[in-house]
Every structure is written in C-alpha cells, then in structure tokens.
Length: 163
Length: 387
Image 1 (cartoon, rainbow over the protein chains, first blue to last red):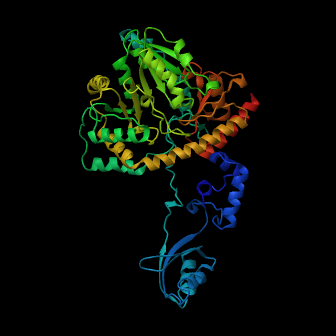
Image 2: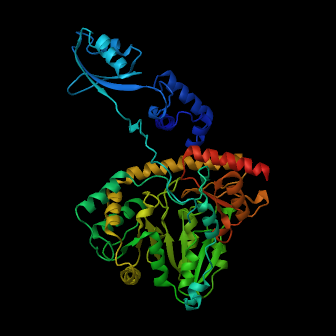
Image 3: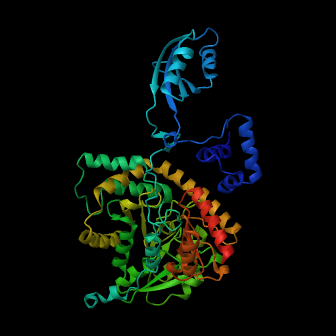
C-alpha cells in the first residue's frame, strides 16, 4: 500500500460519498488513477463497505445496542476462529472482536428492544458449547462514534467575515 | 468630541472591510456559506488547550518576563532554526507578543516617524497602511499583479523608491492572494533593500502554509538578517487565533526599542497563552502538518472549482485563500460580494479592501469544510450564470 492509496482511504473515511473526481482534484491526481485505485482497494477487500454513521437517537425508531463480553474455550487447531464465525453469522450481531484482557470476544448486538437482545444472549449465544460466560452491557447513549461527535456543539463559531 | 482626537487617528480612513463585515455578520441566516474568514476551521489541538488548562490548575497566573517566558523564546528560536534556517538569540532577539498584530505595530512604531515612507506591496493584509500612518508615516503602495502570481517585482518596487523610503513590509505567503516568493524571486528585492538602505518588516504568519516546497524567509537571505524584522505567530499554523500569541525577532537594537514600547503598553503576553504556545511548539508540529495537508487538498479543489465555473484563478501557493478574478462579470468586487451574499448566500471579501490591485478580485478562504466549499462553488457558478 503506497501513500496514494492511503490518502484515498483517508478521504473516503472522512466522507465515503466523495466522488473520484473530487478526490482526484484534492490529491492533485488523475481521475482515472483514483478510480482504478478505489477499484483495487475494493477488490482486495481493503474497502469492505460504504456506510453512514447514524445518530439513531434522533430517529423515531426503537433500537438498542449491547456490547457483550464473551469468555470462550478455544478449539484445538482453530483457536477462537471457529467460535467467532459461529457468532458473527447471526444477523443480529453487528461486530465481533477478539480481545486481550479479561475476556475473549467482544460482540456488538443490535435489537429492537432490551428483551430482544436478552433473548438473543440467553437463547443463542450462551448455549453455545464453548461459551463459558457472557456479560452484557447496554449502550445508554452514544456521544461519539467513528470519530464523529453526536452532540450539536460542532457549529462554526467564527465570524462570517474577518480581515 | 472628534475635535479632541489625535489628528493622525482622524486621518486614518475607516477600514474598507468594515461596512461589508457589518452587513455579513449581521446576517443570522444559517444557510449562508462563509468563505470570508481568515482563520482556520480547526479548533486548537486538544493537547495545547489542555496544557493551558493544566497551567491554570497549577495556579500559573502571574506576569512573565516582558519579552515572554524564556523557555518559550528558546522554543521559538529552535523552531525558526529547524523550520526556516533562521538563527536568533532567545535572550536579546525575540519578544513574545499579543498576536502577530502587536508585533507589526511594535515594529512600525519603533521604525516609522513623520514623513518616513513605508512601501507596501498590495493587495495585502489591511493594517499595514493605517498603522504606518499612525506614526506620521506615508504608506506607499506597490502593486503586485496576477500575471506575476502576485509576486513582488523589483522594477515595480524601484519605481516607488524615493529618498524618504525607509521601510518595506512584506507579507508572504500573501493574505489575500496566496502568492509566495522563492529564493530566486527574493534576490533582486534583497539587492534593492541593501542598496537603498531599507529596513524590512517581514510578516511570515503563513510561513507553514506553503504548499509546494518550503517557505523562504526574507531574513534567511545573505546580509538580510540584520535588516529584517520577522513577525509571526501561532494563529494560523497552530489554529490558535483567539489566543493572540505572536512574536517578533530581529536585531538586538531594534528588539530592545520594541521591548520598551511593549513593556509600557501590554507588559507581557498572557501566561496561559504562552504556556499553550510552548506546548504547540514542543508537541504540535505533526498535528500542524496534518492541518496544512488538509488545506492543501481543499486548495486544489477550490482553484479547480473556480476555473470550472469560468472564474480565472491563479494558483495560490500559500496561506489559505484563493483570489479569483471576477472582472469578466462586469461587476466591481464590492457589488459582486454584496450581490453574492444576498442572492446566493455566499460570503466572500471584496478584493478592493486589500488595496492597490485588489479591485476585480474576491478573497475566498478555503478554511471551510469540503462539502461547504463544493456547495459554495456551485452557488457562485449559478450566480455568475444569472448576472
């Protein structure tokens, strides 16, 4: 990965809607070269998805998110991978991370209600044979996600004209 | 009451920007996109703010030495040496000031007396001329032109020299044009300065915001250090406008004169600002470079955008302003800016306020988000179509 590709990734991470033409101008590059680089990054699964960061608190829809600490017994030969795969295939699981420290996997689960997430943990996650324990933390409020602060204090306080 | 006023103050014309400034800032319209602000859209990096907060928590609220905390002056000289190959003695050749603005005022007050002529390449930052006049000096504009990328030309400078010429004020990278001067561009100017015994005030507040190659300080040219007062500060590169932290460097005799004025007027720069500035120099270079790269990307976008909508625009090589040519629209820069604000809700600064050579241009700061810049260019494009 060269600096050119890294620069493109930075610009798309800031705003994934930026067009290749805009990115090319910002980097002082040819549009075709940017298009090709983006295609390469997509083909290589460096860019895996384009998505929006949403502040769901402002949307009139029930949605709860929980972070679940999971302790597991790793499998001989496949370590944590097989059990991680088993967990991440559930559609209600949004992300799974292998962690250092006091537990093994951190699982982000999204549901319509507290009860729905609780049901997922008790009916699907906990019964898995290698799962030793789970600890569920419900997210009460999101202040910042993916580098974006959700509160409305990012207004431009500068004067409209200054010398 | 105006009879009581100092005649020199009375003689200063009101700022050309003021009327437009009032009109624009009175607008509470949230939909207005402003390209009018000459300050970073970044907030001062957190570690810098935190250093000041921690200083206050530890009760650091006292006066400092008149010239500023010695460790800050040392950090400034080390920074100037590392970044721009300028060597100054922190004990006798540096004063920490209240922004670059105080530094400019100090330099002019120390140098300019009644009848002295001050050469000012224009279009340029507004205060040089009135501050010269406050001391009884005569401001002499020297026009710089788009066909020369707004670089100062030796022959244009020569044409304005008289036996009363004393000071030359340089502002490169330039506010408002974004023009810069290379080493080769400087050489003939330095020759004139030496031959005609001029003193130079070099406002280098935008030095770090130089996009192709490195900034060349006028003081770094052969024999020019003695004749040059370097003015700079933290506002632009470190996103610290509101802290009002600047500095001035020069020959010990000149600095000593400036220090007299400084100690009788402001005593010393505020200590919390000095603590923040020290943190910025010690640990803020990397973050500053990231901000500069961000301006650079927006610069390319804005210049390309103006050209695409039919406004000729020379390529600014420094600062964070584009200075497109609006002469083709048939409007004056004031008419253009006023109508653009009213009809397209985009605020820009009319070029005429920056002095000779500014008419026919508008200053557009690209220290604004990419999406806002794209939207602003689209609106300006539609506005031009309708004229």
